[in-house]
Amino acid sequence: MKSPPIFENKIPARYRDWTLISVAHQAGGLNDIRAILGNDVAIKAYREEKLPFPDGTMIARLAWSYVPSEENNKVFGREQSFVAGPPTNVQFMVKDSRKYAATGGWGFAQFTDGKPVNEAVPKACFSCHEPAKARDFVFTHYAP
Amino acid sequence: MKSPPIFENKIPARYRDWTLISVAHQAGGLNDIRAILGNDVAIKAYREEKLPFPDGTMIARLAWSYVPSEENNKVFGREQSFVAGPPTNVQFMVKDSRKYAATGGWGFAQFTDGKPVNEAVPKACFSCHEPAKARDFVFTHYAP
Image 1: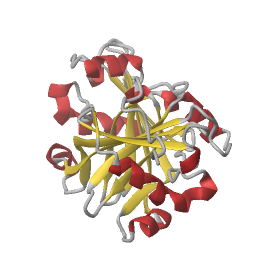
Image 2: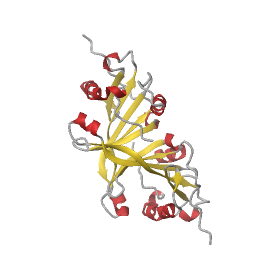
Image 3: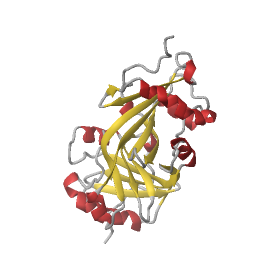
Image 4: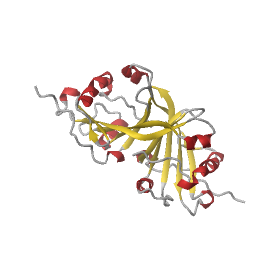
């Protein structure tokens, strides 16, 4: 049996210009600081608090190494500032309720240095997102 | 002597739609997680690595309380996820080399709940930004 499609192997155009949804820090093994961006369809749905997200929604999760900023700490006079270091990878959720019917209408993708990762990775995305089913499988809340 | 102008007491329109420059976490007393956004003029200058920033540059620093996410931690199976809680305040830097000549060409502002704070606060901004003079008084680096 052919497995369901996960995602085009192409990074959505101009995703770096999308609008900010929120920010987060994952400690532990990931140890990154991240920003979640959305295209216009995503942002409109977020601001109108409309669920499920409509087809055409695209959400990007950018992440960078979590690193202390020596130059900021000098100004603050103490070790308190952590900033974005080198990028780690970029992940996407793309809503297409027909194409990705098997995974809640969402296609998942991950790119490292602009290259798509092994298909096994995005396949694992959906199972982790399932607990957020009541919010259409999206964890991130909009930060005003 | 009349003190130099600091900033209009008006929040720049549509700043929440500006493009992401980078993200950071300030621990210590601030204990916030923040996003730095820029208007089109700012983003163009950042991407072209052009200094000083041209007149018309506007940079926003949004900050939210730094809070653990119980729902994310459940999925990760450990205490590792920190997200944006309620907003704390929003700060701006606006470049107008004539109007703000006394402070490196930058006007500073801070708003809490949409209201400008006491003038003493933005007056203190410039002295803290002076160590970043070589980068036109802007600390934040662009995160690709």
